[in-house]
Amino acid sequence: MSARDELVGLMEDYLAALARNDPAGLPVAPGIRTTENGQELDLGDGLWGTASRVPDHDYAYVADDGGESIGWIGVIDEHDRPSVVFIRLLVRDGRIHEVETVVRRPHERLYDPSNMREPRSVVFEELAPGERRGRDVLIDAGQRYFDALERADGSIIPVVDDCTRFENGTKTVRVEDVSHLKGASASVFPLGVREQIDTGYFGYIAAVRDRRIVAVDEARGLVLMIVVFDHPARSRTVEMRGVGEVELPPYHQVPNSVLIAELFKVRAGVIEHIEAVLEFAPYGMRTGWEATG
Image (cartoon, rainbow, N blue to C red; front, side, top):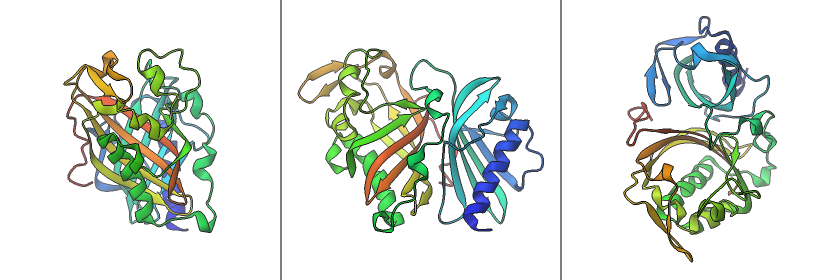
């Protein structure tokens, strides 16, 4: 069995155990560490006590070429209510050493698990040899996306004009129907990735910190990262290029941080798809993995 197959198999075993609400039988290392939304928990707590169904398909995952880490994205029902979930496993010598989980539970925004009930085909597509790039190039593409957000400069991102992005199942670029949005949001979200950033609307993001690489798959052109966005909310407004000063929505006028697992599909060095699981948290939150990331 290849290292990749072992990772995928262990993730399948983990999900099956989660559906049983019982981690007994999983090959865990002594001293295993687990977190859920940044909070350290014992294995068997949190989502383990509420999971009522796991999907019979993989929506998206990235198994690292190095053979130690895998990140999974999908929908898990909790007491029959769907939650958007990211799970990271660190595996050494056939045993699970670390589990990191991000859970987005039912919410009125940035939550649409109905878009995640089938595999995201672009994630699983293997690239032609000429379209593949090395590990460093894939990581750099993801890092430049986050750099662009910090600098409000979309020109530094290697991204196609028609790149898609889903956050907790919600489409957040090139949105056709913005009738549910108000104010500046209604003019920003119909735009593409680069154009959105260039407006300056995301100026409320003061920092993208604690960046970690979860997994890289060169054959499929995938890189999966974990980061934290900090929103200090020192101002109720941002300056949008060509528009002027606009007021932010109320939820961006209070300090908070956002724990994010973000997947990038990179073809020939250029990002063509972005998939994220994110959850809001108190401002300045720690991920629980700063010392080991």
